[in-house]
Length: 411
Image 1 (tube, rainbow, N blue to C red):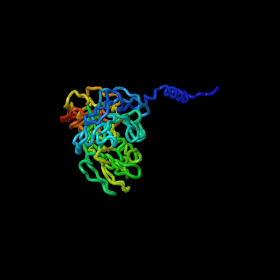
Image 2: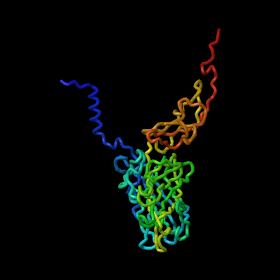
Image 3: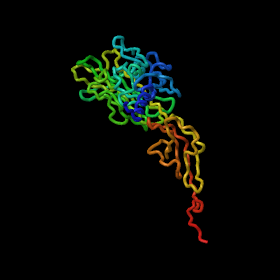
């Protein structure tokens, strides 16, 4: 008879057990943009705010099973500080849901407000990174959606804006794009798709151009997660197109990719939008638009995804904001005033500042005098809840008799 060891039995039972566990158990939930949930279904052009409700992808990064998420979480896209005007409606250079109309005059043609991610620039899945995902995974360009924007060249033509020269690109400021969240979020990931275009045809361009972006919200920074070869994040605040000649296809002149906005308890992110014009140096006449009746520009899209932070956003509940030692103990237990329930998958931590800067306080059960703040912390996603109110610890001096350190008396 063949001998079967206990170790082999355990291994067999483990494999049998794992084989019956749905793959979604191992997946991490992510909040993403997709159709439904009352999200836009119409067309632009418009400058009206676009509000997108996140949905929970329960089996990201390998699947696309979306459900409603509680608490309801939205991102509102709005355009402010418009710098460029034009005669055709909507009379400004940056809008939602517009596109070119060379064959129908200067009017801006309609384009869907909330297209699939591959609706501009033809990017592939590996260009993007979603929340709770490794680089180049988590976004499905045929299931996820972005907000569509149109940057028109018409204002530059109408106002005689400066053109680039050979070897010297030129940038013109257009507007500020503000993304406002209805609740504080941590480390949002922003996706850009199809940033780049040209007037003319291959080998005879009249001008090449691309949107570029500058993060202007103070206290925040950018980290590049993934993207096409053109998708450049040279410092903590800029997103630039590094292509020699920007153009419409991702990987061949159009930049697409994902960046993380580093920060916690973020309620809004603002990008300043520019257009960069590049001289193609191909012997063609250089101009912003082809004729007085034309409408040229670039359609690009932007989206957001969030990690489903297990720490939540609610600050820990405390029974008080002051605590004092009881002799003979010369420290206090900060955790003793925590009255809430620590969310599953997170832990209660304390800091000496309300921005959880630096390392967590090492000995919260034996805290010395000072000011402390409590947070819930999700180590898997490296994110925190909001901060509690400040807790002030006062340590009274204990007499030697109370602490038991006085030498025994001699009778």
